[in-house]
Length: 377
Image (cartoon, rainbow, N blue to C red; front, side):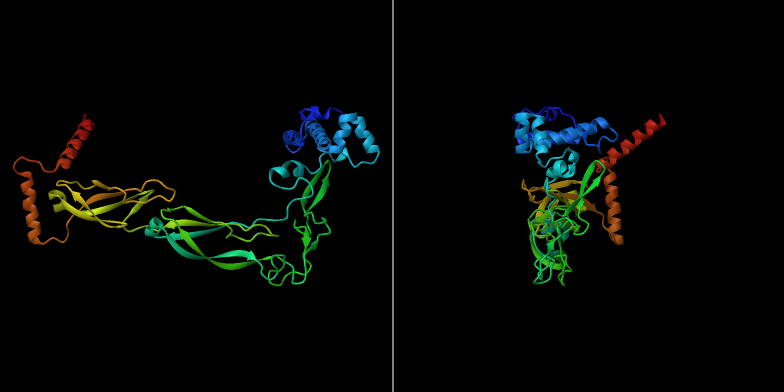
């Protein structure tokens, strides 16, 4: 192993804290790890060097000996029987470097306590329920702690015993050449304990499938895709771990009258030809009841009228949306002979006297003429 100065190897000052030493080591370990640099002997040596420096400088006794006597002090300590071996340079890389990053223990194995899984429930609501809010009950299946054994997995009067293979660590070390890889214990599956007398109700798992009913309060203004989080209502954790959460996903049914776009609502309002021609008042529906809109004489089909604050109050705050009413002129059907004759006379009266009463038709015909003239030209 190289006899370079350990502080220079890690690039830290001699008064560096253990935290600074660890941070420098992680950076070098990630850079020179053999898995990232296959067949690169120089990277392999740099990794070993950084590993040795890290192990010395994070051990208070070894660091003190090194600071006072240098490498000679460490050689003397080894000769005196202190437990240090550079052959462990690769050690448990995943525990030292990556374990801290992802929440595992740096030494002594990984945690055997597991959080329960989150659950998803799809709740279908009417538009009115989504807009004004509601309370409803839901039924779903979950995994709950076994009441018979209290989640231990062992039969009454018995307890899990420490796994002899991993000594309760939940993991074992496997040597592969230069590497020492840590993996879940094959006997206890990472739990660290063995259940010799399993609970009859759960078969030793500590958890059972169960039906659950909850009352859910839906806030006003929710929309398609919104999720309501119910903390601690998911699956039970393992080995005393916390319970997961339940996420209720909102699905709003299609409404026969209204369409929703965020905070706004829209609808089509069928209006008779006579009303749009002569003008009048039309009654339109809103989610809060009936409202009236004044239709001016000569209103064309497709015109949109806006009713302010007749939409939705968003669940996350903000102004109440509006209701947009689109006028659709309804063509009369099932006419009698007399009504048809009256319409023919009316149509004739519209084209006599030199006045045009169909402005959109006139502009459309002029556009068609211009189009064909360009094609012909």
